[in-house]
Image 1 (cartoon, rainbow, N blue to C red):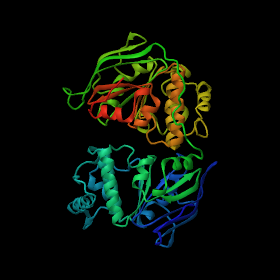
Image 2: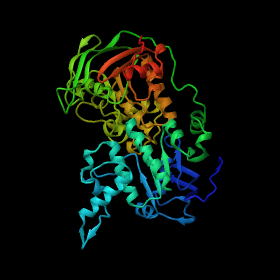
Image 3: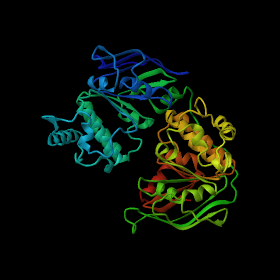
Image 4: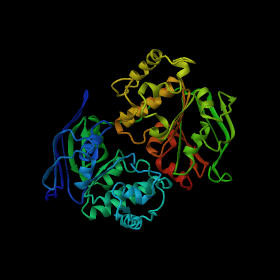
Length: 514
């Protein structure tokens, strides 16, 4: 364990020797963790390291566990979430728990609505919700329906809900995973104000630069054990990576020599209308080609039209698109995802949980989802044939699940992403679109995904990668297109693409492309 430095006061939270076992898996093994009032304490580790399990124990989700929880110097036992809330613990999970059909105020006080003579006091409910939102410095109408809010504002509602419980310990699990840069900066400002009010914050994220920038201390978990706790000022990305994965990741991106072949996929003058205003184009006059064995990256700022382009080319845009698409030099009509799938085109979506997987189905069902006729039969499914077709891929991708019958929801983010990829490989996709391929997964799983993308390109697949992480685009791609306001603003070869040049091009400055 690392040092505590100048933090000499008593912690508000101590978790001592926490252990948790699931059937066949020891998720936590004697973990220790502490939190001080007015501290942002980051908790990091690979997917499967035990972070979420530890926080579910703290939040009362898992009442049965080994070890002790002490709050304000007193031992506590939580039988359910309500017990933890009464002790001042609030957990905001990555999958927000808001009811989209209810108002903001109703969500803040859900199950605890203020009443008068047995009837909900709506004026009081909305005024108190407005007060909590005001504390966070956000202008949100407490009468607005939660489903009408963007992700960043919904997260503020979750934090307001935590404050309404008089929380002194706030847990945030991957809070910026779906936020824009502006929303993230506002969140950091809010966390700073909460820290000044002596609220202790446990912050979980895979974004190491973010962790190092906002945290006071960092605790690293690996394989269910505490590896280290140290002040953020004494940490750096390389040290964190080594501690998280147990080895030095000196070369995240494969640098193999791939044989680039003929043009596999080409677009000409693609336009994608805005669903809200059809006269406005989200993608304007975009033309490009991808060769077999090539990885083409697309960079750009938020709102540049990257995801809209991929979604449209896959046939999943609500407005469709105009322009030409050619596959192996022949015109291709794509009006629906089924058209793309039938011709060997696959899309690894930005949000794997919402649009990439059927979370309550098995790994096997998800892997065979788009290839049932190929691997099982046109009219009657044959599970034995599905298993026979899926097992080699399950093993070669090293999918970390106990079996093909594990439920997708129970898997780590990196493992879920492998299942999504397996779905397209089983369908023998030769053109693959990757939209944010490593969002929300740890550095070790990222390296595996990068290796898989490289192997696919080596096998002759044509790859298109969209990522908000500029190092990822630069590290994976043979060529890079830069989108700005829906148009191609520049093109760079890998050897000439620098972060400065690509970013300058993305924001509208003068950069030399080649």
